[in-house]
Image (cartoon, rainbow, N blue to C red):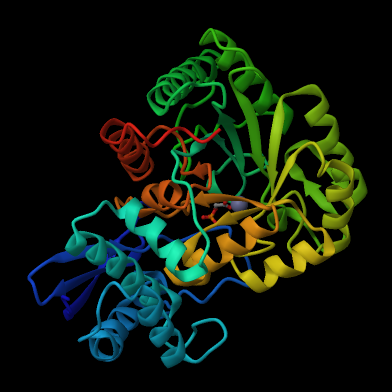
Length: 425
Ligand code: PGA
Ligand code: ZN
């Protein structure tokens, strides 16, 4: 059995030009693997702590302290261990940090090692990363899993914290749920994307893109964004509702003032009930089948209300609400908040905890959606994670910009090389 012989991290840069960590693990059989850590902008307040230098360099965003924690402290805990014991490695890192939110060593340091370790373990066994994730799920939880190719939510129009425009809703996404395979999904989504670009330009708007590759025009209302997407679907000779559904990520914590939801772009000040009705009306007019963070992360009454109102007919996804944390998800299950969870491994900080959260969602009939962050890199681990754990859905931006496309291209390779892994039903 090969053992970890060296760990080395450096500071690299993400898709926004902001520092992040890249980590390399070497085994005594000479096998090496790398990881890179993503980073959010509209973060939930209960996420594990991303350690930043907060000094005068890189506008305070440097991660040299976190890099040093890997190279000078955490490496000594891990060197000599068997990389196949992901559980043991993650737990050793978590125990050493000893804080509730990984604030001593930084969740970014711990995740960098956790991710690189999963890659090196798959490599030394000579198996695909997604197969390794499937095996880990079974080993860690004792339950079996069926691998599948996920159906993406493509974020083709950006607002909120991800764009400098007047749209309050952060993400307007398309779900090509009617496609027969992943290649067709990419054909449809890129067609719609290019047609949306032409429609936006024809209206005299800029077709510059936001952080996740979606267009960021200065439209008059959130509803106008949806109508342009419907037009782009129809111009692609596809049927809204039949071939393509629509998903929203409100990221509502970003425009909640403690009492009201402030839609600045359309001059509206709505109570939780009124905002829930606003969203419910949109789902009656358009084929919207999934809404993420429709309420502020602390507006628990609002979450109860909207889940009661729409939870039976619409996927309601907790992102800032659950922050990939099993304990918060447990509260959601018990109090009937949402019916799905967004999974971002840097919100919690390790592969093992991510798997445990997904398992908890599975046994409680909550859907999981594997997600990127708005600050990404060329690391494609989430594509393999979505396939290996068979969660069925992935959200990794527009079909544009390499930090997003890299994940979709990885899924195309997985589909082309494995005839027995099918698109999730
Ligand atoms: P973030 O946004 O990565 O900036 O947090 C993504 C999301 O809210 O889903
Ligand atoms: Zn979100």
